[in-house]
Length: 89
Length: 418
Ligand SMILES: Cc1cc2nc3c(=O)[nH]c(=O)nc-3n(C[C@H](O)[C@H](O)[C@H](O)COP(=O)(O)OP(=O)(O)OC[C@H]3O[C@@H](n4cnc5c(N)ncnc54)[C@H](O)[C@@H]3O)c2cc1C
Ligand SMILES: [Zn+2]
Image (cartoon, rainbow over all chains, first blue to last red):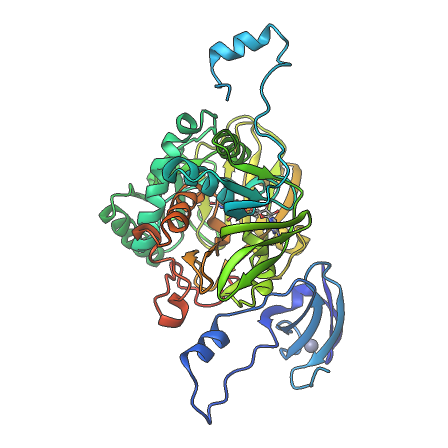
């Protein structure tokens, strides 16, 4: 069982959350020409790191906010959690 | 190579079975190979076998970081089927079904292929319509499919819940009678033994840690046991694909996720077929030892852990008990997990890459065991001829940028959400 510290609600079990994938992926800026390759990378291509991974979760049975979680994909250790709009240094 | 036969069994009995040849050798890596296959799972071993058998390429090494068969080929629930709607998947898998039927003879190794049939249960009219459509598509591709009504399903699996006030009543099902199961370890060992006998070096405890690429061409690999030169390199590392792709500066339409399975204590024969629940993700079959073999959903978040979490297991087994209530009486014997290469449309990739001499085999999701022979066969062809075969032409890497996805389940880019 994972325990995720929701920045809005505090420590909750993983059962309250649903997963949203890699949080480091950036949607292409629409105010310039976007190549097929850029769309392709944004929609499909993922690094899927082994180790520290910044990812999106939604606190679906809680505050319903999207949050960012920094987790180790091999040990499942969770290092830090952030609000969705917080910059991660 | 000593043939496995009744004659040799009797002969070796006189020496207490102490003098059998080793099934495969333990060679030290040579300096150079024509082809290096990375990953000694089912697909890597099958690829090496078909390279030797179909293309006469025997200066081949399989490089395995652990022991052969220790990855997903030894962790899966052994379901073999070709009940797909899309032509690419149907024709590829049905080609594989033919290889499965001949495999024990072909490899001189009993892989215990058991075509016991698979039934996908339907729990609504809409689902019955969808199954009728898929069944018709299958039959157009020459694959056997039978649409069963509720009564027919009840005759085959009376132990399923057919009572009146269940949340997901059984409306019927789609059956592929020729689908089934096989002994997974035997498949790995059978391919390994034959590949070895034709001159392939099976190198275990040797991890690939890097590649030697220059001017857009592969020259070899770097391993924990030194550098090895190779004219061609094929990647068959399933759940480790992203890790090696990073070393090649490639970002792939693949995410690594964890899938669990479990078996119950052994019981008397009760279930003849493979059965899948249609209102969620759960499936069950009974092994020859009597254990109920069960599995279902991914754990749901990127994972390289090779072990699962309890919430998912509980969720999956709740579905199982909804489908077949007697399962709640059984004790759990073992649970385990494997890390899987989930592709973005749920279909695999067997293709060349932008690096000359580097070939890619990945994206097997939940269903790569059944694909073992067809994958090995087509990958060997792709490597040997440096071009894809028509059977794997659809499994291209660039289909994601051209929009030619093979999205069998209509799950879009997040095949890990279900
Ligand atoms: C619980 C579970 C149930 C499943 N059930 C089914 C099923 O019922 N039917 C079905 O068709 N499929 C099923 N699958 C999927 C199927 O098992 C896989 O898709 C398939 O086995 C993958 O191909 P493989 O056998 O070559 O992989 P693997 O056996 O995983 O082989 C990959 C090998 O590469 C090696 N490797 C990785 N990195 C390196 C490196 N750097 N250097 C050297 N070697 C390396 C690994 O050690 C491993 O041995 C299931 C999977 C799981 C986990
Ligand atoms: Zn919250």
